[in-house]
Amino acid sequence: MTLFSERMIAWQRSHGRHGLPWQGTRDPYRVWLSEIMLQQTQVTTVLEYYPRFLARFADVAALAAASEGDVMALWSGLGYYSRARNLHRCAQEVVSRFGGHFPPSAELLQTLPGIGRSTAAAIAAFCFGERAAILDGNVKRVLTRYFGISDDMAVLANERALWQRAEGLLPVANPREAMPVYTQSLMDLGATVCTLRRPVCLLCPLSADCVATHEGEPERYPVKTKRLKRTQLDLWLLQAVDEKGRVWLAPRPAPGIWAGLHCMPAFASREELLALLPPLEHERVVEHTPFMHVLTHRDLYLRVVTAQVSDSAFAGGGGAEGGWFDEAQWPALGLPAPVRRFLEVTGS
Image 1 (spheres, rainbow, N blue to C red):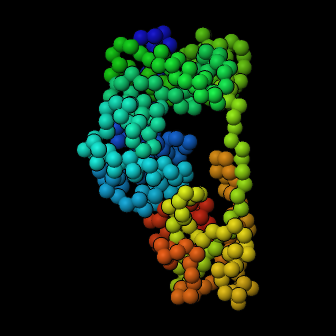
Image 2: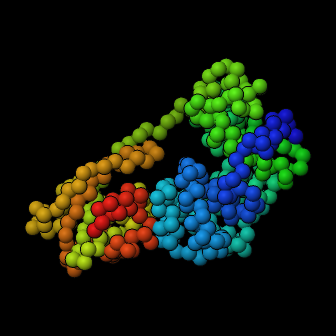
Image 3: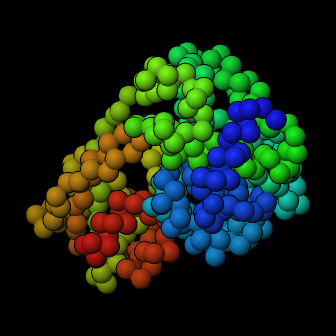
């Protein structure tokens, strides 16, 4: 076992996190579910969704047998909805290809939808004790600071070199017991000590040999020059309400934003929205105060227009798949977070 891994394992046992609901298990289903939920999502948010998901889908067979609509409805609010679609597809492939049992190696796990190299390694390490290296954003930060790697991580060759470094640090002795603790230690150190901003180097078990600590500028690392440019998207949403107070909602097309989720009809302009309504209705619509919803690399400016319509005459704007839903039915639908919040606040 390397000195690096020894320090990390000792630190994890004394100072790491131990109370998260997906810890202390070798059940691949629970570990996989937590890993997918934690991608691009804060632990505090996942803590709300994880138990609800398990209560509804207790194992991979139950998830595989569910409809995509049920999965999307339960995922609603977590964002990055392609994760939910891949989660469902992955469960179905685990059942169809592997008899309901997750394959016991990172190599095979990577063949499943939505499971990349680092996620596969985490599942294999936690559940099967495989010597497989993880390299998510937290771990990249820890390793580039520790070694003082100023190479641009946006360059594929540099990232490959970091993978090799990560593999060279893995514990050798007793991997079945050591790998889950070591893997968790990297996750915890990056999340709680070696943070993106204001890292607490005095509490770090690696500080004695950390290049970034000795340089006094840990926040310089990692270096990544290629940044996705933020964009802006304006959407006009029609809250069509019928005589019974129901709202028209239809699944969003794929690919695209909120694909597969139920949503009010969306338009690029006010004119397109009004074109769906009879001319006499134009003077009676209510335009709500615009609001912004922030995605990772895009700002959505949402403008909602409410109109009272006849359920028999309204074309829908969402095709035959759309329908009228009352307030009691909204919780069971997969709705985009801003749409759900709007409906809950304004009602029908």
